Amino acid sequence: MARQALRESVAGLMPQAWEDLQRLVAIESVADPQQYPPQRCLEAAEYVREAASGAGIEQCRLLDMPDGHPAVFGHTPAPAGAPTVLLYCHYDVQPPLEEHAWLSPPFQLTQRDGRWYGRGAADCKGNVVAHLTALRALGGGQRAGGFPVGIKLIAEGAEEQGTGGLEEFVRRQPEMLAADVVIVLDVGNFAVGVPTVTTSLRGIASVVVTVRTLQAAMHSGMFGGPAPDALIALARMIATLHDEQGDTAIRGLACDQGWSGVDYPQQQFRSDAQMLDGVALIGSGNVAEMLWARPSVNVLGIDCPAVAGSTASLQPQARARVSLRVPPGMDPLGAQDALVAHLKAVAPWGAQVEIDRDMVAAPFAARIDGPAYERMGQAMELAFGAQMTTAGEGGSIPLCIVLQETYPEAEIILMGVEEPQCLIHAANESVDPREIERVALAEALFLRSCADLRR
Image (cartoon, rainbow, N blue to C red; front, side):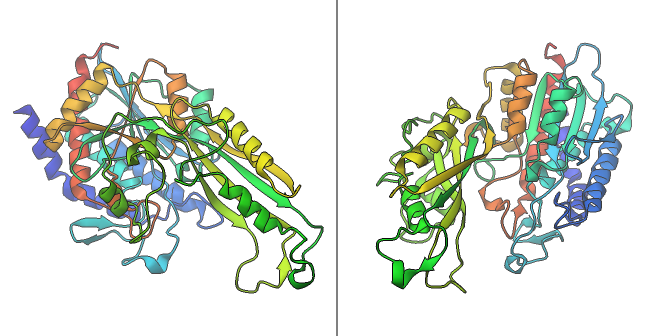
């Protein structure tokens, strides 16, 4: 009966979830002052602070982060003998990018075809709302100390910008976020209705490579042929980063790792990735192996003349940002060293190569043999009506590494309302409200079940 009451409570809170998300999406909380006023992020932080306080989180306040972006923090102490659970999310969002590609205004929550559309509807304001809904369902706001476990809430405000403020804060003040269990709501399910915990994240090892061959741009008709073009030299270097099958081919990096979690059917991946008809998948492994267990390398940007306005000139210099994603078990600094050495070794025609080291973040592997993980599996099965599965994540969340290093005994559980149809970071981002309801229910069931976990 207690479970059924909790289920009914979460279901009854979904109109409030819509209102929360509607108000949050309307706030243009892009943490980039060059695009949006910082006041907008402050408004979002204040809304989260007020809502969390109303949901029962005590001592809710804004904390100044080292990067200048405020985070929302609150703490309801644990009843005697009960553990403390840290709930993480972020209230900042990506910019809308191509606003003309949106079918409805990006900062206006819109219901269409059973989904809720708007920037941040899934990443990560939908996850913020899932936290709030779970806390309200537990009745923590109805009485002091109403939660069965201690609750700490941290909602940061610059996750999408990667400024590292919260990571540095944890290093400086580790006691603030210390907990027995951490629930990171910033990922999601393998598909709608498939309860999924993310157990691994790839790390990052990026560089910016600059290639120079001439002192100045030279006429392509007068000098083209014997004079080397820096852009062509760069293109040849980039082409060596993959072999004929499309496997990553950086010298010194293994690219044959396997994956033991959920399978990712090719047709589903093709649809999720919005691949064009006739374009083949690359690599010799299956999709899950290529996506979650092996290194991948991509070119994120190239500095060179645009087609429009270009002249008949050989390019004296070209530059590219090369991003290398590294799987768990691979040292990101060693991988970056290998990428640097590879690019220098393959430079043709004696071209001058300068490489600036860019972002480095370690990969993450969750501990999945603890009691909290087992309890979450039970809670998700009750909430979704299906057994929990595991998946990897091709992206990176540097905070998870810092939390793991700082609190080695804590169990870190990554989950959330996102799934491939959400189109996070793209136009027409959306969330399936059933995912908010089921994730909120799973979290509430989990928190209730954890009261007897030993601290």
